[in-house]
Length: 146
Image (cartoon, rainbow, N blue to C red; front, top):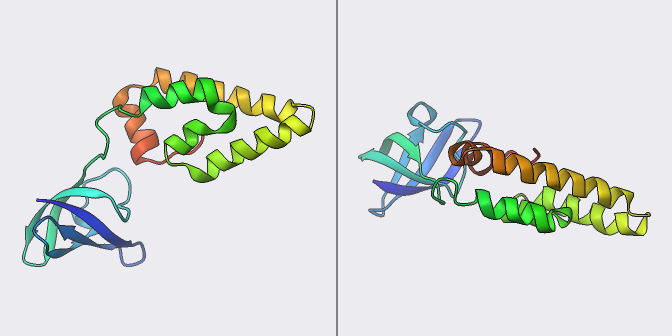
């Protein structure tokens, strides 16, 4: 059955899933089949019985590698301003890059040049990763830098 994680308590390691059938199911962490911890809002596929969910698998909202090429192109052309970070959902990292780029222009351009080099390195890394590795690292794993 398809569903969505409503909340995940890291202390008790129990999640509440809203199933497509309109019912809510409790999931213990031992039933989680993902490589990273579950997060609120994550789409899942699971087996539901009464009030418990078992064999819970995360479902990627984007098909494998769908974000890799657009993120690489954004990193190449607008990476200095952190646009690729915003595209991947990394608001904090995107804001850091944007602010450093703006203030770097005021400070003789050196910080902006450094951020540009970081964006170019990320462009190369995005292109060198396979679709599955990119998804595992940047979409599911939420790795913000490099």
